Length: 173
Image 1 (cartoon, rainbow, N blue to C red):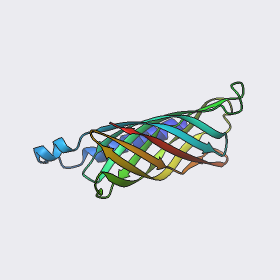
Image 2: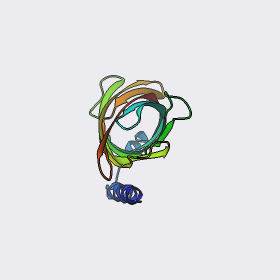
Image 3: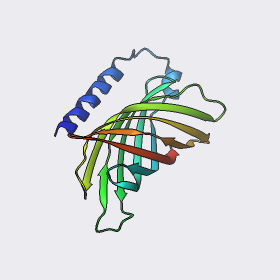
Image 4: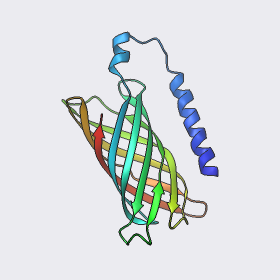
């Protein structure tokens, strides 16, 4: 499948780009930047399937204080028309997250990247690579944080384009 080769090539390039960052960093700076993991409730609208609900997990690896890379895996079900006609979607993504300096315990962040729109069951007419751009807001409390974001996504099918509009709310820990 072209989408899998495309996704793997992008992941490989992202890892190479991250590994070229200078390794000479201060000990305390390296300890301050740790990987973060999040899970969210994913509500989305797809031009192909309608409204769906699901979950999404994200692992973010900081490059520096303002930029992170993220690998996301999402699963959604379009089940509002009943279980027999349900459609299911797997949508992995790789993102670059830019976070300007936060104010107090809140920060707005911007992200963009690419991924895949891979229907697992039901209507499989549209599948292919995706390009997304989004904005989110994170509110810290203690060791965790709550976030919400919106990420309009363009689906590039073999013979037509589609649109995906997800809204996510979740926790980072």
